[in-house]
Length: 177
Image (tube, rainbow, N blue to C red):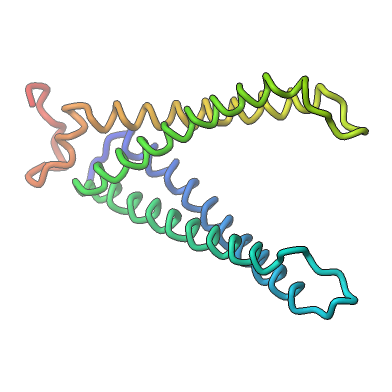
């Protein structure tokens, strides 16, 4: 079955994304167990303040990460099989990532403008925070670019043709479609 290179690249990106989200879910689950166990210790031992609340938050992060990983993996499989629902799914994922990227970049710019007025930790040079802000902004620009590409690419007429029920995978779509 012939798949367009754009669909194949999207599958690779979604696979990487799903794997990272699954790893995040596993790490959050481990952290939840560790925090919960520390809350069960007697008062004389080290215990985290409000560890019950922290364990609940980590459990929520675990569940959300697991659901997002399953969604990414299901979309990947659907794209690989050229299912029309997967095209809609990646458009929704792309829209969410694009919105999150814009909000994150706006928040980083806002935080960077406030940074000179905030006290930094004593042994951390100010340039370290600039590197952190720039690195995170570059990550979100990259994620937003991928999301924007998905939104454009999966709305192209030729790409939509690949996801039609009557598509014959051995022949490329006609340019007049």
